[in-house]
Image 1 (cartoon, rainbow, N blue to C red):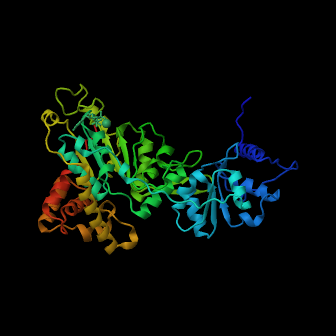
Image 2 (cartoon, rainbow, N blue to C red):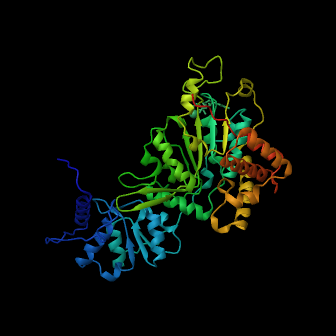
Image 3 (cartoon, protein in one colour):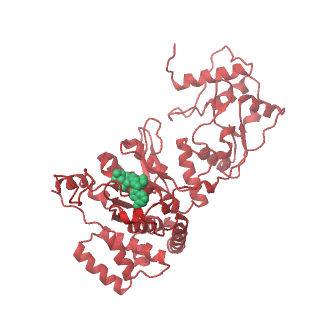
Length: 475
Ligand SMILES: Nc1ncnc2c1ncn2[C@@H]1O[C@H](COP(=O)(O)OP(=O)(O)OP(=O)(O)O)[C@@H](O)[C@H]1O
Ligand SMILES: [Mg+2]
């Protein structure tokens, strides 16, 4: 009869079975394995290998000196093979900083090797490990695999016909690391546009790649080559739960907002998301960190993302189209749009309408740019931002206009006199809030960067103002 068992009991069975395949029997006396410190809850199958190694020392198969310098982790199969476990990279980095060596399953070797200067023994099985220590079959050190960047997103902006304003907004979003909201009728191409964003974002820098890889390592979802070099693009379904979005759950995994760290979190059909889930994103979006509270500890995961969202203007989808909108207009649109709270709306630097694509655009074959060309401009604009912020505030970790704040923002984005007078007029006419004012400055700074201009001018302010949407009044 099959029965669910306590994880520690399962571990004991796996160790017993794998010893059996080596022709070893566990001593018949009572064995106590103390996983100290006891007040830290142990999760996963990481401890199979260290417990098995400890037993082998007790049984005289290995000497204590053999394993003294190693930090070990790995899951044992019933046949004595070593299977992968999550979180190898952070464990390897910690091992390297403490001056020890790492012992892990062979399948995790290339992931662990990204930790840098560290001796790694990556064994396929318990038997291979024993043979290594006996000197009969020495294991070679693990090597990091170089990820193939040519396998990058195959979705190209070239596929999108017309929608020039939306494509421009997507480029600005990518260039400045801004948050973008697209609103439009069904089939206008919103999801299509968002899915092309990763293709125009620059690859991760070396330190960024390590950060992103560590989070995915904790989640146990790393690609085979180990290191992630392209910016993550996460598009959770709107039925996603709060722990799935911000982190937590039984095993306290990072949430979607952390899995999208330094990349894009795309929320398609935004108003369909559960309200508390959306509100829980506000804090991480502001601070760049997701804090998960547990009974005995707080766990903080990095969560610096670009939020991209898409939505229809109302439930029927055709608000504003006199021929197709439903009978509940405008109430239908007010109810639907008011599902998104003001403070969340306030986090979108760029809000655009994506109307239906014109028939003439769809049928004809107008010249269109490829993602690679747009990506070149985005990379240049990002390099300009990096240089600027590293020169002004190197310790603050600002690398894009989207996170520029306070005095730094005024220092880099105060427009020339023409631009300033337009902004002042707009502030009075549009009743811009303080946050709204800063948002216009940030986007205008990005527009100037895309143009290679040191000064924010009137046309930049005018374009930045056009990426604002007047909120619907509550009915
Ligand atoms: N501008 C366009 N150029 C080429 N194809 C398009 C364009 N817009 C839409 N399409 C086609 O329509 C399909 C639907 O587009 P998409 O799913 O992006 O629409 P949407 O705006 O997200 O709609 P919904 O609001 O229903 O989610 C696409 O897969 C594509 O085949
Ligand atoms: Mg869609």
